[in-house]
Length: 244
Length: 262
Image 1 (cartoon, helix red, strand yellow):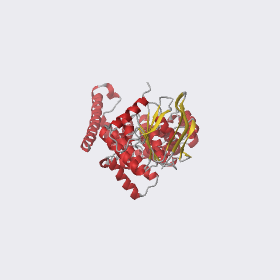
Image 2: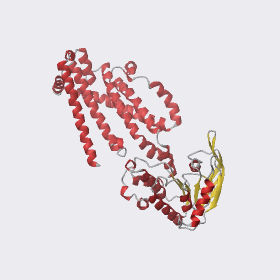
Image 3: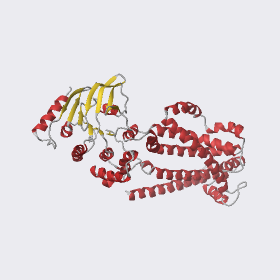
């Protein structure tokens, strides 16, 4: 379990201020969806959180301590493909488990489990060059789930997937979250996706990014996208995102 | 998919044979019907000479022994270039400090052709084998360093980030991400370095030698024997081709994941 505290986070690229004094908390076991206009700095925020970018000001704490990638169990599914082309699908999935020294039995069991989850059982011995874009993203998703992280960061992970698979993986993510109570920070520009999955929604403004609204999603799980209350919530978020 | 692959392999071999036969036909026609015949022997005379040299001595040795002597020089010089060049290139690509220290010296030495080192090589190492190894090594090392550097410095940072997220430590990132990601580029450098080694061995054998493919060419030039010169050149070409193919096979084994390596 992980509790994330973001205090006065500020990040600029040259003269362009991307994140402007952002503060919020993600509690243990939260499922937070962050939505905002395209290019508002959602990815910059996640990259800062995992220290891929140095921040200009403020602090990010996990369980009250500075982020330490070797100590805190974090998995990050990036927007870009991050599969290693010299490893097969199976080896890619096992990479994180091997560096975290999972037992052989657990490694094999988890590999089979996540391969099945993303529907790539038949492609275990394929190389990334032989896979489609959506399959590559599924490998990254499987790899992240395999390491059983305390904090799961997801940056528009389902954007490249076809609708059927997206719906399946959305349900799968909700199931895993309910089972494990892993803290999840999920970035998306798909409002329906955010309302469908999240327990909390945070809406960001356009650059320089600030937190516009942060509220609990009260709809009970499982949700139905055609229900009136769901549509009301979706419209509420849509209105908040409109920045023009 | 496999069937298609086999077909394309057969196709490559057929085209290879066709291009060689085509070259021989053009060569023969040019020699038969133009004034080229005054300075150029027929390809069959040259091939006949090569066949003869397999059993009859040129100078003190038969052709295969001359080739072996050159091969030994190439291997020693090239091996030295690899064991120095690959780590140096990777160091430059991975470490900012390493790059800051090594790159200025490398940039200064890079434009100097390997052959320009011949006078110094003679002064430093005499006219024995060591100077030949040295010339071959400095000729091959530039492309080996450059490509290893490019491979290590152009590793996709998304992968490095992903590995860090999964808990990999710097040493693991180097071993499991940087090194494998650099392999195709390193092999590209090894291929160019191998060609440079063969170019350099000819010059190196001009220093003073009594054996080798370069020696065959040099003595052919001194005695005005065009057939011998061409026989030496073709031998170098064939052995170079074999070595390059062997290197490509090793690359395919190591980079089976890479479409270009298949």
